[in-house]
Image (cartoon, rainbow, N blue to C red; front, side, top):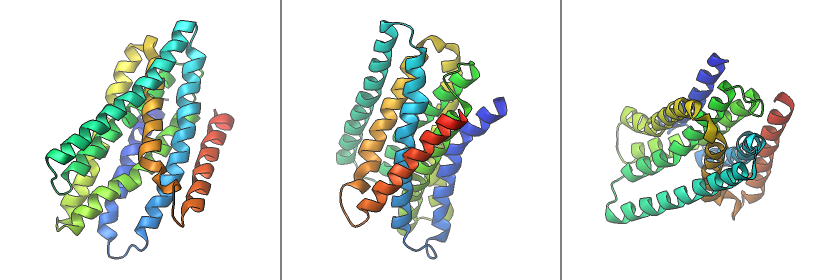
Length: 250
């Protein structure tokens, strides 16, 4: 079990590293925007399903009173509000100083921290022996976030390379958000394990943060354009795969 937990914590970071490595193939990679859009759509579906089946559902099952259910609702709402405030803060910084590529690194890193928290919280519940948190659900959540991190790593490293930065420096800066995410996951795993009493709040907080990321960062592909139907199809496919994994393997 411990090996599965440690492995699962690394999946999102591996996704970021893989996405950042696209910078080594910039001259050879064709239609990279289409590939990244497809990955975003699949990841959005997986993350939406993971938020409900791997985070909210276990939290509600753990709730033993009306107060605990209120804690779940408060956690979800707090997760969304927290990210609204983070986005406002980022936009103010963007107006104050726009360094080439640096703001994007910082913004993606901030966005990835609660995703790392989500992974840490789920695996903490798994280690604590909570039956409502399944290994399949936890792994599906990790894989879903890893898929989403592939385009995030690429959108940092590839523009930096295009602006004249060296290939290896661009690759390294692309992995920064993954390092922060992995650290957040490990720290959350540690602290959540010792404060298991507020686990429903933590699970729903992470779910709220992830739903916000899906709506604010990933759903733009669905709104318009020639790829809208394909992106919606891939979103539904990602959601269905995650739901089946959690239901039948959990």
